[in-house]
Amino acid sequence: GTTSYIQVPHDSTLDPATTDTFTWEVWMKSSEADNNETGRFMDMGAGGPVFLGMNDTDNADYIYEAYFLIYDGVGNQSVRGTTKINDGKWHHIAGVLESDGITMNLYVDGKLEGTEECVGSGIPASLAANIEIGRYDGGNYFDGEMAMIRIFSDARTSAELRADMFNQHSDMDDTGNLIMMQQFDTGEGTTIYDSANSHNGTMTNTSWSTGGTWTAGNIL
Image (cartoon, rainbow, N blue to C red; front, top):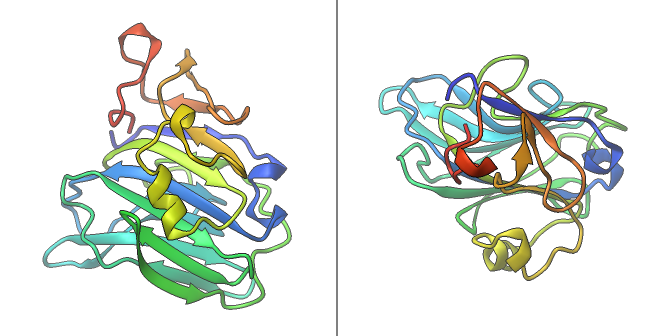
């Protein structure tokens, strides 16, 4: 829904400035039909300095591509995908900051679609901000569905992304450097549990399905 979101409290282990390298992953589906919108799947810092989402580049045809942005204290740098992702189909999106702390890679469905370099010297010293899933800056909600969120403290390769993109936590080939994974199937009340560690999220304007589990893909 357009007013549903999840908030994960700030923790230094989730802060990209801690390692200067990271991977953010999400499974998403959207049929967004409005123009000039920017849907955020994951956002840290109220519209930056880091977010992974989608952006409209064609006002006439309402074409949205994946969009990965970092503000590094000097200026914004963004990477845009090439695949239309507001087609009502599921897509796997991954934003990666490589180990050099500068190179940004954007993957769509396991394939590299864009590469850029940060404007300055990398991410600011500390973002010290919550992670919001499905909105940013106190509003501006993502219109669609998400089925999985992952955060790694390393730069995943295309092969590593493809190896685990369809796997639940218990079936993953490699959980090394996995900091957070919300696969939206366990929780209680308004709390959604982190399958990898203890970075639980709080849901707003959404609810669990029967049996205390969330039907994958119906969360936002």
